[in-house]
Amino acid sequence: MVIQRVTSASVRVGDELVGSIGDGLAVLAGVAAGDGAKDVSWCARKIVQMRLFEDQEGRMNRSVQETGGAVLLVSQFTLLGNTRKGNRPSFSSAAPPDEANELFQYLVDEVRAFGLLVETGRFRAMMDVELVNRGPVTVIVDSREGR
Image 1 (spheres, rainbow, N blue to C red):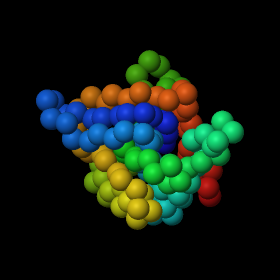
Image 2 (image 1 turned 180 degrees about the vertical axis):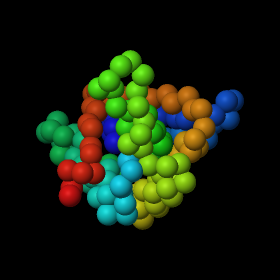
Image 3 (image 1 turned 90 degrees about the horizontal axis):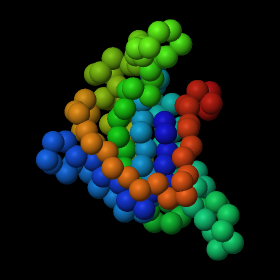
């Protein structure tokens, strides 16, 4: 996953606005072959509890949950692109679409279970994602770190 602290973020499919948030986190999430419910739950906790927002002393010491922010979750299988060989990424490590969609929806449900406003893109659609990254703050999280 790529997690970015934002002041705003939105997703469009064609001319349709399908998701939009103000202050919070924009999360690009890829599902790898072999990922399961435990990986998704671990990632959901990271999204909600990671301290990426400043406290009164200016240190990143508060979570999106503590600040009352929102989360924009966008499925992005291209995060799993392997670029070791040649110039065209291989996506063979990505989960099959049906499995990926099921786990992505589970991620949405898990983050919502923490009481946050969660907006999403549209799975397997060509999306235009816009965001204003505050900081900038961007972190990469791999669920295999939690294993």
